[in-house]
Length: 443
Image 1: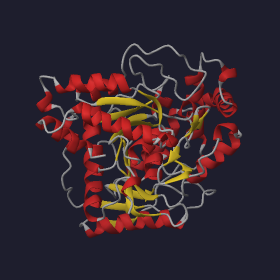
Image 2: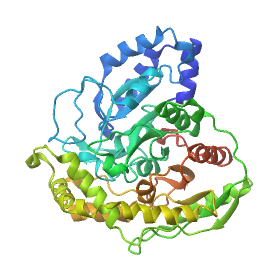
Image 3: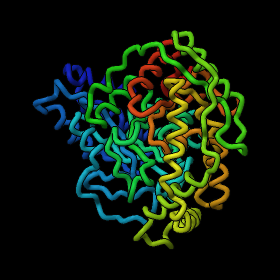
Image 4: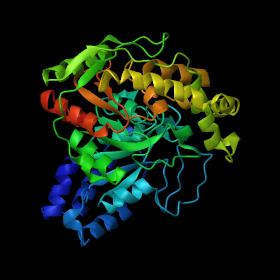
């Protein structure tokens, strides 16, 4: 699968028809059914919509002209029920598109299908009653979650870009698992409107892609601001390197710690000033856990609890109690410490994962405690930026993990408004240390 940027250029120039691109994507999806990346594929509608793009009067100006895009199955797509990975959710088709889907369509994208998610998008591995979503790099391991189907689809070359969203790392974790560029924008940059309350403001919509240019282009469209797609060389920046664990109970795998060091070294080679600067992670996990569980409880309101998975019922029950522990003072204190931290650095580099992706297994049949422990142990680095509502990006690091054979990754994060800076740094890294774009590109 070519990049979204290349596809759009060819469609605008008339060198290829959108329907031909859509057929290629549909064929790839059919051949990769074992990955369980899609909950819904739209073959007939896709071809009609692709033909419609080809006849648009504004074709020559469409930034995503004819680009096949996957949409995560937790936002409304007109004509399809929003199941959010659950048999407890309504089967009634949505009547309108989510604002982000509207923007993608307006930009010329063709929605190829809806990607798989864990129930209510709660977990960092994707499985459910309809199957297990697998990592294209190692099908014994998870593609991550909750945007697991999105990551599998892009990493396998089924689509060039995918929509995802991120409440505690749900774009960045699967991007790291599958070797993709995934960015969680800061609060308010892209319309969220996820579930009952976007997990108390922690969750944002954003893209997963194989290149920085594609990620920037998709984010630009989602944000309604094409200037985000301009990724130039940033000025010399102060880069903090934070290798410490967010939790005293989480051990950091040496390969992921080294991936962060290598990323910082590469940025130093580009002229940035790098220094060790450990982050002020929250001393207590209460604020994070309260929002995670209480957000789930709000999303489950009105659903048939007996139809929910056992782990979800337990999570929702914890959230009904945890709501009382959701306090603005937790975020206020965290913002003060983070603001003080960024007085001395412009951006920070951390590991993206603490351990390789966990097994592609029926986690939905395991206990709530097992799911909680597995998620926290392997992917603890994302949550800080959701609590703050600040932008953060997962960037691939060349090479693979010596045990899992899955890609390596680092995280780059910054203060509000730094999305373009993060993308520019990632683009520098891509030029200096290019990564393998998809699992199918391996030699």
